[in-house]
Image (cartoon, rainbow, N blue to C red):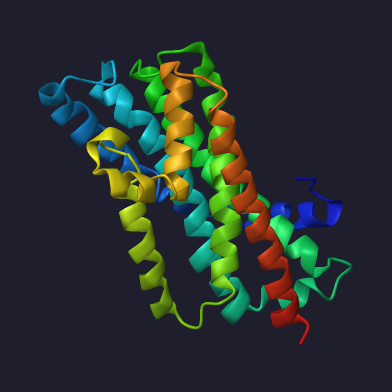
Length: 251
């Protein structure tokens, strides 16, 4: 994904805005951290090992993937909706040489940056707690960026169809089951066979499996499937976002 100079102006604008309200950036970061302490460590003493690693080391990468998802989704849904429907920021932006495609790309890049920031913060916590058990763990941060891209692009695409704030209840209706049932707290083998197929179709599962393999050292060529899934998800989301914004802003 190549960021154009005009798209970079959107990113720069967001940086300048959040410089004064930077605490909002961390609003969705703490929930996965609290889950790590309460479930990963608290219940982890009772569970022991899962798939050959301590339970806290099993849960931590899944929560890092969830953290990246939270950051990207929070920014690409409600915040984008406010800019699009109420602040009318993009109407003003399009009065400049910036085009609709630049708006879509710039905002998605900013959203994935927020997801990457959450992922980085969570990775710092994992490192401090000794939960990264493989040198491959250094690639967990690029994996979090990829997760952020997939959910940022998809979240923004969904937002272009949202009619009111009440519609975001449906977004939460999707995100909560994703968080709980993407092999986050249990290995895939713990699910019934039909459910395993369902779980493997969900986007967060691919992010969880990717980061978990990197931090635990279970690296194989099969990880490329997870990368391809997330890349395709992000590319499709970016394409839909560009088309929908053109329809909404240029009509």
